[in-house]
Image (cartoon, rainbow, N blue to C red; front, top):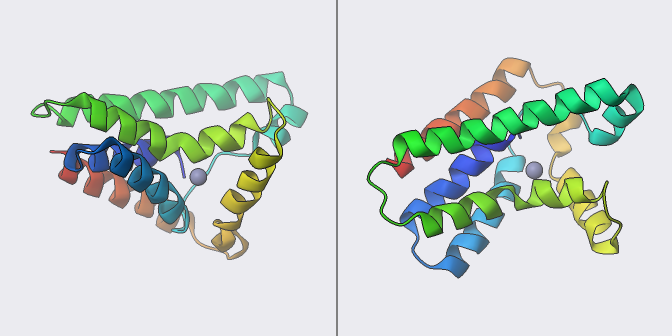
Length: 151
Ligand SMILES: [Zn+2]
């Protein structure tokens, strides 16, 4: 899943749950649960690295725009939130699994490899031929539900 729906889901949890441990655990779980739903994804960094530096830079630019869009949407719709601590915690733990998966390309820890395999396993639906419009719709729906919860 791209970053925006994960950030929004984490923020939605942080906007409703006011215990840092609960926010962290629920936001982390939300990531894995949402990854079970068919969605669009970025190409894997390793493929892009082989494809060349320009593709890799473009890839990280897309991720940066995606990340900033998530933050912008939260700022836009969270006008009446008084405690951003929980929201920021939710956002961070909502994207932590993706951060861990990417970390694998930078540092080598056995845990990161195990996590990567587990994370990839959740995308079992990738082997099925699911139309793009469904994969885009699921992300839009998740984002809208999250915004509705945040508001
Ligand atoms: Zn993921």
